[in-house]
Image (cartoon, rainbow, N blue to C red; front, side, top):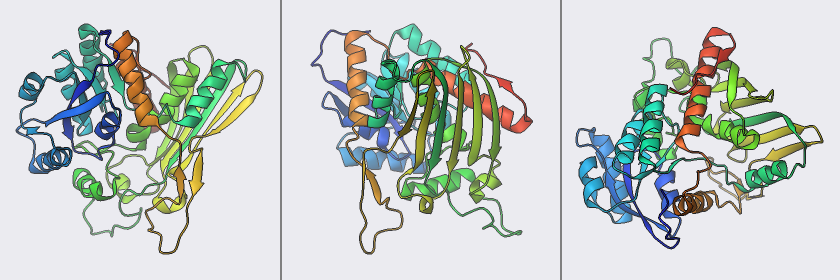
Length: 373
C-alpha cells in the first residue's frame, strides 16, 4: 500500500507502552515519524494506565483510554504496540483492520493462533508490518552484504551465541524452602526500574520466547530459509524467577532449515556481572568457500572510571543506527509498496520455531515447526 509521497510524515499511535519504551522511542528517532497519541483500553489495571500516562506526558501528547477513539480521531497512519506480550496481536489486529500499518514489539505473541490472526488481518488490509529487530546493527549489515556477495560461498551452517548480560531478579537458590514462589507479573512490574522487564505479562516466558526473535531473525535473514525441524535443551539455571515459574533462562537449539542448511543457537540471560557489554553475542557462518565470525557488538569502545555503577556496561556500542535504519526502511516500504525486513508473517515463523523448541525441550524429541494456518 504505497502512497508515492517520499517526503510525507507519518503519525503514530502508541498502543500501550508498559515495557521499556525502546520501540516507540525508536520510531520517534526518525524525522519522518511523529508520535501523536498514546492509547489503551479503559479496563486495564492502574499500573498500565500510570505507565501510559507517564510516557504521554514525557512526549507532550494525549493519553486516551479508548483505543478505537484514538485511532479514529487522531489522524494516524500507523500503530506502535509495546503492551504486555499476550496483547501484542490483539492490539495490532485492531489497528490493521482500521487500515493502519503496524510495528510490534517482541515477542509477536505467546500463541500461534494469535499470530495467524494478525497475519490474516495485515495481509487482507494490505498494510505494512514490522516486528522490531536488530538486523540493521552495523555488524549484521556487513555480514548480510558479505553473504550476498558470495564471500563464503554457499552457506552450510550458521551458529549464534546470544548470551544476554542482564539480571532477572534474585539468583537461583535465593528463595528459602518456606518462601512463596516469585509471582511472574509482580516481579516483572518491579523489574521496570532497571529495564529488565522484557517479558512483562500474565504468562511466564523464558529467554527463548522473550529474546529468541533476535538470533532467529539473524539466521532467517542470512539464510533466507524457513526452519523445518527443531531439537532443543532448556533449563532454569540462573534466576529464581525462572525456576519458580518453570521457564528457561538457558537453552541450546539445533535447527534443520529448508534446503539442508543447519542452524544452531545458544541463548541465556546470564546476569549483569557476567560480561562487560550487553552480552556475548556472536555469529559463526560456515560456507563452501570460507567462514565468518561476527561479533554483534562491534564497533565498540570501553569506558572505565572510578565509582562506575555496577549496572553500567563498560563496553559501549558506537556507530549503531539500528532504530533510524529500521524506520528509514519502514518508510521506504510504505513509499514503494515493498516488503519489510521482518514482517508479521516472518515473525509468525519465528514464533512457531520457538514453540517447537519449547516442546522439544520438554519432550526431548525432534519437533516439526508448525506451518501457517
